[in-house]
Length: 308
Image (tube, rainbow, N blue to C red; front, side):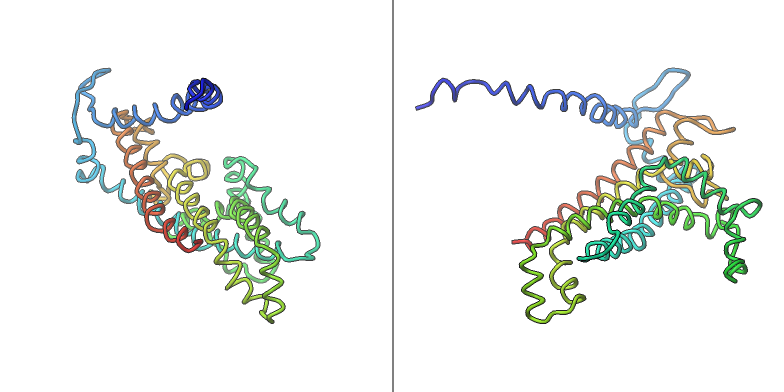
């Protein structure tokens, strides 16, 4: 028999969730939906628009004036992400494994120092590294000469072949603290009984890490991967702070964020277009959506089955 208390409407749920749902709707869901809507229109004159269907997407993908810079930005963004995956996350895993060792002196200090750049503004980081790497007044050339490696110095931020890699490594240096902290929290949560049993069986430290700890932290590694993917394909500030909206030299550091900025707001002689900007933003959303969906439907399901 259903009592009056059970029939009572759960107002407390609405009371607690209402503000969060309202903020999410106003600042996230509605702007996203309005951007998708705007991408289906074209500008017919000053302040006037007409429904254009998927015409903007066809233009973006097939018109050489739009498709060449778009595919260049997408490819550069992919390289930007791969550098983070191949450099940032392995370094984060290595540092987390070292810091989580029992009896390590100064572990808290190391964690704080490594995580500290993450707290700084991306604009400040970009400006500092621009000063360090400058061939005119930077200190990097002098430091390399002091250790006998001066011949390796080059204007890394000024060359097309090295500018994007240099910026990606600067980003790795700033944000390596995030995967470090996530993996570290996962490593110290591994039950001590498992480690002690492995030690009694004579397992080496490398075997304990490779066959016990690493499989148990795979869900965290998957989370780090998807956070890296979403963060890199939404990147903008570092490229803009160091190379400006043109993302030079010769658009070699242009990524989807800077391409969207030039398309929407315009830059120098280029006139901005709200509808094409919304189209680029929608394509960024679809790329991220596909990546996240692939992670959840392919990788995450396997991780859950592994845990069982």
